[in-house]
Length: 491
Ligand SMILES: O=P(O)(O)OC[C@H]1O[C@H](OP(=O)(O)OP(=O)(O)O)[C@H](O)[C@@H]1O
Ligand SMILES: NC(=O)CC[C@H](N)C(=O)O
Ligand SMILES: [Mg+2]
Image (cartoon, rainbow, N blue to C red):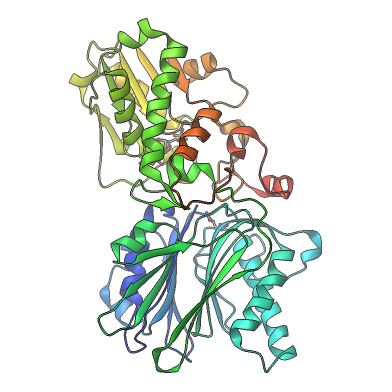
């Protein structure tokens, strides 16, 4: 996962740091391991503040922000997929050379053997990308000294795309002059451009992983960056900013990661012209249909309550309860001071976090048949714990439903689903999964229905032509899947 943001304010006398951090707060759900921002003034060296933990920990003091001066900046919230959980690998990362690059990456990249690059953090794919960017740009800078920085960056990106594979949505700040955003040729990871018209006639620009970050900062969506495309926003003298889109390599497919719509993204966001909320509503209605077919009408009508799993299960659960005309019961309460649990490293930590995060309202379960709805069942830590709570609170029959299909393969594009054998659905039938989590039955939304829901939620402008669904099928949209899959390590 990971969240990225980049901002360039039209007025070069203004400071952007507070807004970059604010944008990251809107993306905190995408990464909780580490975070950071890099800020610069036109023509000056950038400053970076980053560290392990949440934004509220790393930027606890306002003095840390006020010392970051400049009108251009990028930021990152990290959920590690490769490399270490060290401060050095928190992002943004920089070459600290000439031209100076600050870089932030969402996704998971692999490199063919021929890519040949050197880095101080060998395990980190993001450092690998930066290293290729920096060494290529340095060479191009020497070879084509007369060219504009934007042209040199374009040449650099062409070289980069031929040397790496996988998923990447990235933002970079080059020589405190260019804000650059670029996306892999399959558009697996999200990246959207926004603009904000100011009263003084100038325009501010912003790139972000999710539209919610743009909207919260009063930016309007310009458009999503297309597969294989880069956008270069350049600040000139006298605050004149230009924006150029360039197709770096041909579009392979326009196939965003469906798991963004299932779980990662916030429901307020629109990704590639698809409303996350609408997808999840449709998934709930489709799950209701599946329940009728698989459990049978009699069993469905014996269900007393539909219980959503906070937070990502809410939208689909409500839609399902409406479809089946079964009351929704808010039987699970979320402790607001706890984070997402699935992205925590280590089984023990995750289990402890689920227990701390969710608690049952006993009266909503006592003596009832319940249908509990979540967006996904991954390792089963959440579902197992919830079923245990429901039983303890006196539930009679417990059916656990997932508004996405069974996960039997690794997610290779920036989500550490670890070893396949950790997945509760790996090598198990639905009956065995139910036994494993202690439920009377489990129910999954079939893949064709999930895809149908997401396609039906596409707005008129959306050019998406399919989805990356490898986590459900083992077939990944990019050719380098094998290498990538092998490079994922358990936390
Ligand atoms: O089977 P598991 O390995 O437990 O993973 C699945 C759970 O993890 C996610 O929730 P999470 O707590 O991360 O985030 P949320 O609050 O947005 O639902 C997801 O929504 C499921 O509830
Ligand atoms: N989740 C991500 O997008 C991770 C980015 C990068 N692979 C890292 O581990 O830092
Ligand atoms: Mg959840």
